[in-house]
Every structure is written in C-alpha cells, then in structure tokens.
Length: 225
Length: 252
Image (tube, rainbow over all chains, first blue to last red; front, side, top):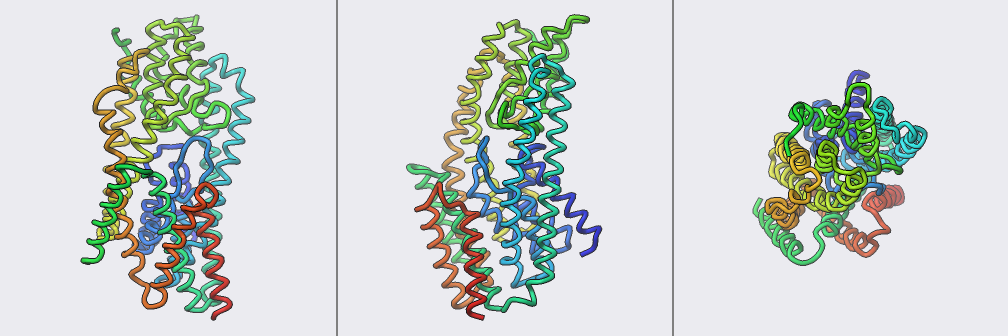
C-alpha cells in the first residue's frame, strides 16, 4: 500500500474518530460508513462493506451514554479494512477482526485519557469560566477538539500499523484451517454481540414482540433468497 | 415575548456551534463548556457598551455543568439564552438548566440512541445484505442526517421560542408519539436485519465451519446474555479470536 493511500486512510480515520463524540456526530463514525468509505479509498468496496457490517454488529453492543466507557469502532474499522484488503477473500474477515478489535479497545482507552486531560484543563480555567470570559471559553473548547483530533489520528495510526504487521507476518504463517477458524470466531462473535446488544436495547414487553416478528420476517426473506 | 432583533442569524451560529457541543466533554462540567460556546452566540445582545457584566454573568451560567443528549442540548441553550434576555432571575435559570438534564437525556436516548440510529443502521444493513452495496451506506448517511439536523434545529428553535416555559415543547404530542413509536420500530427492523446479515456473512462458510458458526453464535449469545454487565462484545470477540488462533495452531 502506497504512502499516499496510508495518509488518506489516516485522514479518514481521524475524521471518523472526531465524529464519534466531538464534531459533528453525523455518524461517519459508524463502522458501516467508516469501513465502506475506507474500502472505496482502497478500491475494494466489497471488503470495506464486509468489515463494516461485521463491526456494525459489534457496535450494537455499545450504548454511548455520558461518562460510560466503550470501545471505539470507527477508526478500528478503517484499520481492519486496511488489514483485510491485502489478504483478500478468505483471510480478510478474521484478520480484520483481530486488528479492529485491538484498535477498538485502544480507542476506548484513549478517549478516557483525553477526557482526563480536558478535565484538568477545565479545572485550571475554572476561575476565568466562572467570570464569563468568552476568549478562555472558546480557546478551551477548540483546544479540546484539537486534542481529540490528535487522539483519533493516533488510534487510526495504531490500526494501520497493526494492519501492516498482520499483512506482513500472518498470511504465510497460518494454515487454511486457522483462517477458517478465525473467520468463524469473528462472524460468530459479531452476531452474538449484535444480538445480545439489541436484546438489551429492546427490553421486554411490546418491543420484544416486535423484535420477534422482525426476526421471523428476516429469516423468511433470508431463506427465500 | 418578542425575540431580540439579531435572533435569526445568531440562532444559525448557535446551531453550527451545537454540532461541536461535546468537543470539550470532561468529567467536571461534562457538556458545560460546549453549551457555553453555543449559547454565547445568543447572548451577544446582552453586551451593553462598556458594561458587559450581564453578558459575562450569563455566559458563566451557560458554561456550568450540563449533561443531556447532544442532539437536544439546543433546547436548553435556546431556553436559557431566551430566559437571560427576558430578565428571568439567575437562580431560576440555573434551576431550569439543571431540570432539563434528565428529561433531555432520557428523551434523546429513547428517540435517537435506542430509536432512530439503530433503526436507520439496520435499514442500511438490510440494504447491504440484499446487495445494494455502497448506496445503502450513502442512503443511511443522508436519511439519518435529515432527521439528525431537523431534531437539532427543532430543539434550538423550541428552546428559544418558549424560554423558561420550555417544558411545553417537550409535552408536544409529536415528541411523545415519536418517543413511544421509535422503540418498537427499531426492534422490528433490527430484528429483521439480524437473520439477513447472518445469512449474508455466513455465505462463505460450508460444511463443518457452518455448523461451528451456528454453535459459536448461539453459545456466544447465551454467554453474553448470562454475563451481561460483566462480559462485553469486545472482550468476547477478542477471547474467541484467541481461542480460534490457538485451535488453529494445535490442529494445523
């Protein structure tokens, strides 16, 4: 993969990471969007969509509420697509999942660190904030967004570096059976996480009945195809 | 109540700033700093020549602790700014902001995080599973954001229109109706998406690997449900991949 393409993916991953919490929350951070656009950048939309769907299922396990800690799957999906792209076909999903889940975990931790740094900056500026100083307020806000952009870039860079390592060392080192097992693990875990997350969101009562109707309808359409 | 003369352009600036409302999210004031930045555009009329003490006091109140759903923060921004213009006592404005945190958080979670977002995401997943490809993703971005931007604009306008009596806006039938219907609609569509996505992703598996996938998926769901709150999808995925790598190494 060329340096230009790596930089393009780094830029995309940074925007995706910023979108999750900071600016503008238009959901380019959703794995389906992050992955398919990353795939399009690599000229491999299919791989982007497959990894996007896989991580979108993992995303269903996450409810992004306030101070709760959660993994960051947007930049992770960009790294996963980069890893899977070179492997192509069979190896893609499992390899992408390994890279993406590790990056997603690092992304979640990095958000906690950045929030801690912003908290310290807010504490330092509290006298000016309580005095209603508009310049301090805007500067503090802009600096926090910049901090999050740097964080998102670093997380994406980690994902791309892991992808580079995985592409370089794994394909020749593992057997076909290992590839299949990794793929089964990736898809099985994603489906389980997506379903468990949805069930938690749905709860009991009427929504659960609607969910059952949906599953039945979806299963019939899948069977007919 | 008559709106101050600069209201419309200032509302536009405030709306744009609201897209960054969580940019400075922190454990102390949570969204407070971002709220202050967004409200500042609506408070400039309070500057009175040399004496800008009313403006500064209002800005300081605007940057206090706040936490709610980001798409609905505009309602509190608009209401607080309007109350400042209407000369509502400061302690009443602070109470208004505090009182809005819970309802706006709860409404936003039901309407967006547990409604509109998973609903639209599931529609996109169905689209990909049925072979629509990239256009499913692009369609998701466009349709989702029509709702997203409309909600942000409605919230800011409603807050600015009603000021301290903003609770009226939250009781409107269409808001309550949307909150009540979004859950079942999401459940139906996500329910339909899951088997279609499972069918789509398992297309490449044959023989023993398909059987194994069924066992892993069903067993994983049972485990995640049983250990909910303790085991996350991420940890389960990483553990399963590690087991798969070990099994592949032992059984080449």
